[in-house]
Structure formats: C-alpha cells, structure tokens
Length: 617
Image 1 (cartoon, rainbow, N blue to C red):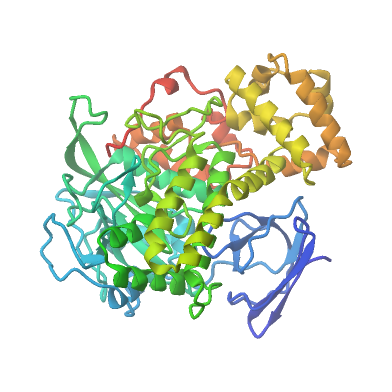
Image 2 (cartoon, one colour):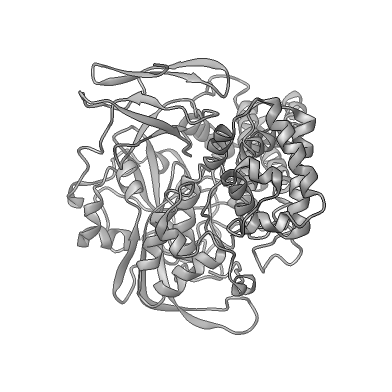
C-alpha cells in the first residue's frame, strides 16, 4: 500500500508517493480532526484550488468530499487509488443563530479606517477601508441558489440553514451579525492600460472575517449590496444576469481546479435598476440580485498601487507587511528580503494561474490591475467567456474595443500587471532589489511556458517531458483547431474518449463532432502519426492515456450560451436551470446523463455566436 493515513491523537498523519514529481513528501499533522473509523475505502486524489492548497479526496463509496489541508498541492500523473479512512462532514452548524464572526477583526484593527462614517461617494484619503453597511432590497428577496460545498467546507454550515429566514436575510444584506463590522475597500488600478485613480468596492461590502474549524480565515463579501463611498457614478447594485454568471463561474472554476474566489449564495429581488447593457443608448429596467462571495483575501494589485501613487509609503509598508504575515506563511517576516520574496511568489503564481486559464479556454474579459488578486486567485467575474471554437483572438467583452484582453493576450497582460505591481513595491526596495525584481519579472514568460506545457502534456495524455517535440505537437494541433474553428473543449475531450486505434485508422464517428472538424484539415493525419509516435516513446497504454486525459479535459464548461439559459429562467423566478447547472459543474470531468439531455456537450446552438456580454452589470 503506497499511501496510508494513521490516526494519532485525533490528528491525521499522511505520507504520499508523489508520482508526478518522482519524490516522496511527508506531511504530518495536517490540522484536520479525524473520527476513528473501522472501515476503509479507496479514495482517489482530486485536484482542488485554494490559497492554502487543500488536497481533496473523492471516495467511490461516499458522495461527500474529504478535505485535508496540507502545504502541498499534489496531482498524480495517473489514476492511482489511495487507502484512507472516510471523513464525513460532521458537526456542522444547523442553527444559523448560533453562527457568528469572531471578535478579532484583523483588517479593522490593523489597518487604517476612514474616519468619515457617512456613506456618500467621495475621495477617501489615508485609509484602506471604510465602514459601510449593506442596503437591503425594498421589495421581497428570494434565495435562488446556494453552494452546499461552500457552506459546509468553508463556513461550517449545514446546507439545511438555507431554509432559515435569518440566513436568507443575512445573505440579502438585511441582517447584521453580532460583532460584525462591515467594510468596503479602497483601491486604485490601471484600467485598459491607463491609471484610473481611486476605484474601490463600488458595490461590495465585506460582511466580516470568518475563521472556520480548520483555522482558515475567510472574508465574506456581498456583491450588489448598494452604494458605498467608492461607487463613483454607479448605484452599487448588480443585476440578475451578472450575478448568475458570477455565482456559477466561481464554483465552476473551483471544480475545474483553478484558483478562484468562491460563491455561497445568490439572492434575487423584484427591485429594479436601469442598465444600458451594451452602452448603445437602449437602457432598460432589470431586476437586482446579490451574491455572497468568499476569498481568503480581496486585496488586489490596485490595493498597493493607490498607496504608491499617492506617496503613502508608510501605509504601503504596513499593508504589504500585513499581507505577507497573513497570507504568505512561507516568507519570513523578519527577513530583509521579504518584499522581494513576496514579488517573486506573485510572479510565479500569476504565471501558473494564467496557464490554467488558457488550458480550459477561460478568458477573464477585464484583466485590469484592480481585478488581479494579490493571492493569484481568479476574482471579479464580469464579462468573461470560455472558448467555443478555438479562436486565439476571442474577446468576450464587447466593451473591449481594441481586444486588449483577448484570450491570446492574457499571458502578456499578466506581465503588464506584474510590472505595475513591481512599480508599486519600488519604495520598499533597495537599488539592488529593484534590479533583482526586474530579473524576476523577466523570468515570468519562462515560468508561464513551463506550466502551460506541463498542463497541455496532460491534456494529451503524456507524462514525460520532450520539450521541443511536445511544443511542436501542441502548436500544430492548436493551429489545426484554429484553421477548422474546432471546439476547444470538446476536441481535447473527444481525443480522450476515442480509441487510439480508431484515431489512427481515421474511423471517427459522427458522435465525435469536434474531432470530425479537425479531421478535415490536411495536416491532421500527419499530426496523428506524430502523436502516436510520441505516445509510443512513453510505452503508454491507451487506457492510461485516456485516464490521464479525462481527468484533465472537462466535458462540461460554463459557456456563455449555457449561462444564458439560467439567466433567462432566473429573470422569470425559475431557479431550476440555475441549480441544475450548479450541480453539473461540480463534476465537469464526469459524464452526466442530465448534462447530456441538456445538450451541454453538444455543438453550441446558432444563437450562441450572437450573444454579447459587457462591463455593464
């Protein structure tokens, strides 16, 4: 048995054999209290995304997920099974009245707070946060959906609390919890390449910081909860279409294994606001909604930029010290080089995050520095889109006239944003450190390419690295996909599902509709020969190839047209499709009958290409 969990004094001690890295890593005392159990089950390692890298195990004999927080994020190169004791979600809080925030409000107690308590739009100097209370809806609110996983695994709440009136009021912004101090954050940012000055949480209020039973501190933020000092020309509200998209995508990205903020709930109201959806002079009334979203931190690159631009070096140092102390435990806070280590970590993790985006065809749509997290997680889901046909120049955001944030530009935008972060940190560095930071940033492209190729090798079922040969293999396939306008997601997925013998012989049935497209290209038969030869170099069995590919290539993604199905239903107070999709996207790599009946793996309908999304929300 390669892996065993030993229960000692109620804590778990774990030893892994890391096949992917070909070395052994021992991790002890992971911090999760385990019940003793006389029954053992086979569980398989499943990728998960979190700022503290949780390792998640999925049991074939249980429907629940088992989480063990450890300092490594391991993903074996095959489908090996591991023997572990099952852990049920025990002792969850079922009475919402007994759930509360802790009294040590670290953000409020550590960082400068705006002395003005009047909630009016204004410039806010010398502060990181303003105390702001959510503004409740005037008319009735309805809970449209909740994420059971988020409630249980992050907030220690039993999903049954969703039926509680107090819970619905809380996630609507209509119930204050005892000891809570709600805050909105002041930050700036470069928007579409230009400095935009003070921005801030224009329609978001952080309800509080919750510390769960695993010792993790999470910030709960209501998006769409009304006016704040940072609302600029807005009203602080969000509409149904943008809220549904954020709720679904936050959770879908998590289950794809991509670092992301989470969503706990979405509430809709009969209250309306006027929105000009495409800024074309055709405003209309739309219903409001609010999403409860969570992150370990909502600090962004723009959080630091505004302090440097305004010459607040002392406050900049205070904030960066706080961020390092709270969220980067591997960095020694007493080390003189801690600011350089912080930057180096962000360069690497941002490169990795964007490589993951590219691997699933995700295009953020508005990669401003105020939308880039200091924890390198995906935040602020606005006019995003997933690729249908593979088009490197895909632009999901109709507000992006110049295509600055297209799919193919995202890696370069990451470098641009990191350069702005580097500039924000300059006051904290010596002259030597400034030069070293330039060198660190120059390594960003290599780090991105290494991660990109690592992921795309897995997408093709390969384990070992043959650098030049693999780069050519991936590049040629993507060129074929681009020329034939083949579906990005389903081309890779169908490659994982078809028998290699049939692929070699050209026996591609009509059920493989995406592969049928690439098969029309004059290069495809030659590519298949290259691919087969590369597999043979690893002595790879077809079963193993398919297993690797099917855990890396999703069958279901949140395409814009799929999200639109939910939006249109929710606008009519029908939440069935929203909840169906939320459930389906928990298992994007697994064939699901309901998803097939809904056509989620079929060619996109003709009307999908006419859908548009914008910054209006």
